[in-house]
Image 1 (spheres, rainbow, N blue to C red):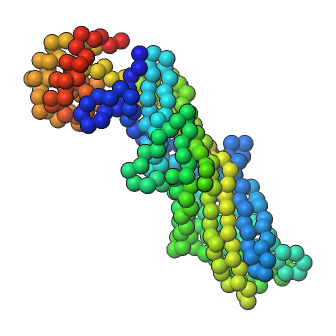
Image 2: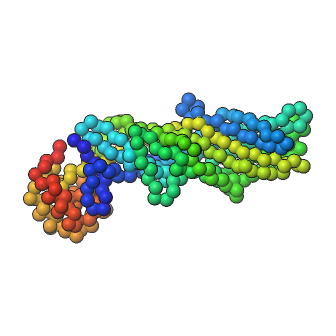
Image 3: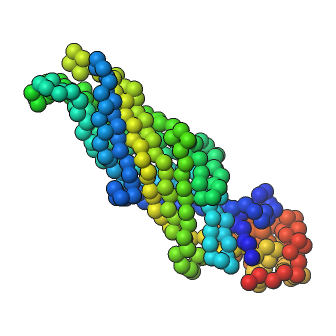
Length: 301
């Protein structure tokens, strides 16, 4: 039997899902987070250096979930980045050879993911469009140094707190979100959530004077970023049950009538239904009579 968790307006809809907040932890494991940073600098001609980097922090998302209780599985049907920060490990990039060289260092660079306001991206076959999610770097420094025989003769630092950058999502990039049943809890079934994101964070071009040289630099961090977390889904809704006894009959009509107009938004889902809110949307109104009518005579497992 299929159970849905969401509502549209005040009517229960069997094919939609509710957004549930999930905090995912990103740990600096090179076997999962296959990230690298590529920096290109141009003085007279462009030169490129690539170094491995890692990431750590948390990413907060709203995850829309459809729950299939009989098979104890869940499928993601939407995702929206709502907060959280990621910090990237420092990296040193070297350019030129001989007695005069240039060194670029990333120092404590961090930032946050975001989704355009109100957007919940649909997920198909566990995949979503990563191009819709931006990254803003707003902490840390980019340091450029000119060296002669290995000695720093001039340096210039860019403070991202005062000069932040925003990078759009990777062109053609996708994200994958998967849910695996982790066991039952008193509040409902728990699922492990794994988010894999194609990452392509671009910085620049940025121009700065290093001594008597004008240096233009661009940086790209690309690869896969993996976050892990756990979500506990609320129990499946027993559609039309307005007194919490697991059956839909005349008693449910009576309970809706006795509590008509009440606000149940402060209650849990099961408490709402027990109080006469048949569709558990936070208000007892005519839609609850309709929910009872449409499901009259059914019994929930």
